[in-house]
Length: 144
Image 1 (cartoon, rainbow, N blue to C red):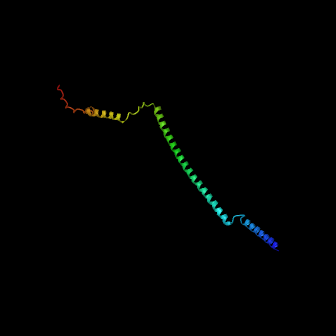
Image 2 (cartoon, helix red, strand yellow):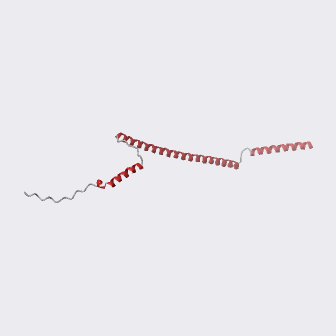
């Protein structure tokens, strides 16, 4: 009888162990609702982080594009101004005006102004026109 009890207890033990393994296998076959919710929240958080990073990159790219557009606009304005200056120079050249010498500077111009001022101060009579002399009384008519 002792052998029978031993065999029976072993059989009951194996059966219980198989049942426990089956129950454990069923329980771990898929995540529970709480675990599913946590996983979904983690995935949503990661997606939000990626979206925020993409938004930051897009804003930086937009700022760079705006700066480039400003530089292009400034370059276009500079080119237009240069073209206007070239056109004005071409018009003067085509008109056949006198040759224009480079300015010698402010000191040279002051020298001429000083000479002109000295000349007018030295000869005030030459600068002002002579006033007509007062008319003399008419001579008496000759007697015939």
